[in-house]
Length: 611
Ligand code: F6R
Image 1 (cartoon, rainbow, N blue to C red):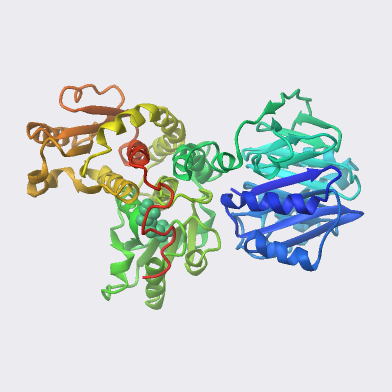
Image 2 (image 1 turned 135 degrees about the vertical axis):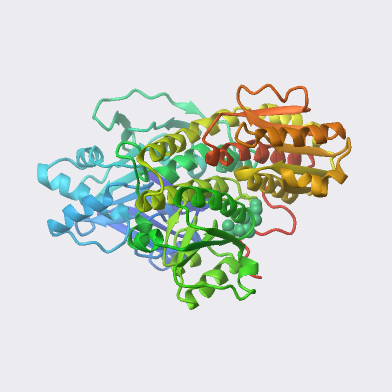
């Protein structure tokens, strides 16, 4: 989720680029950089916020009216000055900036190294820059044609801008899976990941589609497909203001993050879930796979929403690998002198990668000589650096304090880990693995169909905005979803809520039920469905208002429940990825109706770096 800005015209490019990058910082910022053409390509880049880059530019300004800028949210290599974009090739003859992931970068890097190319950074983007150079020189191509031909050989996602000192009056732009649009001005053109960098100069935009490129000059632009065929584009007039653009047109970051989950999960699986050869490829675990396959116990430590994902992970890993799993609150693990022995593996889950308790669990395990793994979103974060190995979520920055897309991405990554270990251990057969890979691949579209019910959920949230308490019930791998639904509601709407395993209700919480108590029950038609329905009957008998989440086509609950929401049918262990979506939406809309500060709830911080 990096940010891209580009400019070609008569104004001073670096001013426009730096202002644009500041506006794109909401997409993630571990480093930033610009390249401006002025006879040669001048690059300035710096780890940290855009303000750090500004300090560099104050000392070493760059003049010129053609340039591009990038805020990075790392996917390959730690955040530092060297890995920051732009990346140059051929002694700085040209530079590129890139959002996304080049999946076949390792193969390309090997081929280029054999030809004598050397690499200064750990990024896939630098590999792409050298590859463009190689393609250009091999066939003596124009710069734009070299970019085009190189991209035909690249697998993965990109939003890309390139400038070359040989053809200084143009920017080359390409998009596949990472948003890019052109801002159309008078004698000048702009490029952005969204329109925020140039909204004060023009509201006329051209959206590039996946698989399209553009050559952009001061007075013209041509759009064509990566295969070379020209494309006629329509110019759209923007009506959004700056704040709306940063939030993708949504009222809050939380809603944007809920809505972007299909794409987030596609990113998390990209290049990893391989249906064609029935494989899971998790490069970050390759070196430790022998230890994982022989693990005698896996202890998962996390906090909050990540702890709920860990509980789903326990079901998944035990089911597919038959390795015993224990889930611990990281905050408890660190203080209770845990028994750790040879054959144990400690896996931590953290969106931010900076949670103090989770980090302490990593350090404690390492002191005991135990292998540590991280499932982390923020590349280069402390937990990502200190764990021995791990798998990134690639979910992009999560800005809303209440975690949503990180939860589903964590569950997807844990599923992939469970399947990968199971395959190596021989505890999952090829047919079952294939069924799970198909199930995973179907999830993004299934989530889209649940998100399509958001208006209905918004409507029904009016009935609950004055509730004082909520109960959430689920069983099996939907029990952690009940916990997560309750946590989402409490943290953003300040309504008290409890999550319980459905069968535990009769051991206590049933005493709370009366007509004022909304009870959310996840009732998927699995092996224990009948028992969950008995629980619903008990609630209904006490006039509790049941909101049931069940699967499409099930109308058996209609008479028993006040509201029935449907999600598509999936494999049992993948259900949390679907059943959590209506709960996220319900808490969001209830909080909005209660006029709460959804993105920054009181007393909460996005990253809890203190005890
Ligand atoms: C809940 C929430 C928190 C975090 C918890 C762990 O919506 O965001 O409960 O899940 O603070 O944070 P990370 O995953 O960054 O370690």
